[in-house]
Image 1 (cartoon, rainbow, N blue to C red):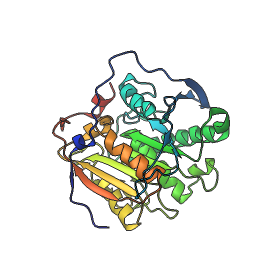
Image 2: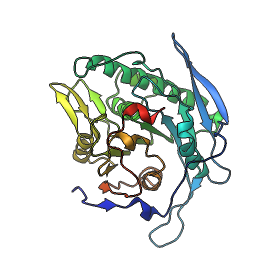
Image 3: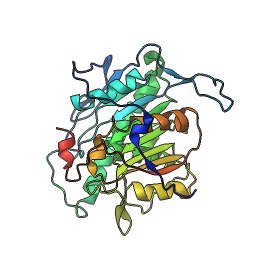
Image 4: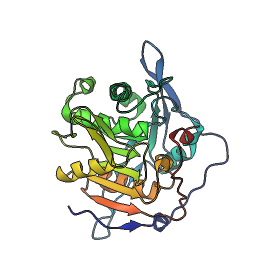
Length: 322
């Protein structure tokens, strides 16, 4: 499908949000999902607001379609694999938006394999890839926990959307890619299991096997990325079989594979898009409703140019998670 030359004004969604100024949102449950040699891993569950957990699509003739259950959003925090936490107040306003709009949120721990380490890419690329794999392993363990305990928790394990920011986005994208290739790491999960959708804010895939391929297809995927991002590269870099494949390169792979995806390019923005949850809500909601719940293949490759969303091209990654 030809790339769309569009400019999206986020304000046209007719929705604006401000950061919540009250108490920090508390999870409805906190559960241990795994024990590792170095730590125990927990997940927080935030239940949707009462009466808001279904979506009624409008059919072409204007009538209501059947009510569809909204997915559970499994959230993977960012922080460069060396900092961040599942329950940072930084994410409070975003979790409120999701739960108030009928989405259950499961925010997970994962091991920070780069904590206390200083890396140089490409020299230390194997160490960085290992950090991604450690995070993916923990995401899979959390997913397995939800599969095994879904009935008791009221969670449909076949209706999980994984969403990540920065390092969390690398984790989410890699998890779906590994599942499509049924790697040894993904064997933790049942044969045939796939996520209902993937949402990546400033993410990429790191591969030491050349260009990523999806032999079993890709889950519906949304890529949001600043076109001036040099921290998690907007386009990417490749050195022989090793490469960091940013959103531009991934969108081309999805296009060739006729995958179900949306790619929103934030004009003039850098890694600040990794924290643009609230500003992107109208776009994310459209993806969740149309691509995920309705199951439509709606391919969008567009520029978002919102003058109310101030660009911070000089922002350092750590500033997003303090």
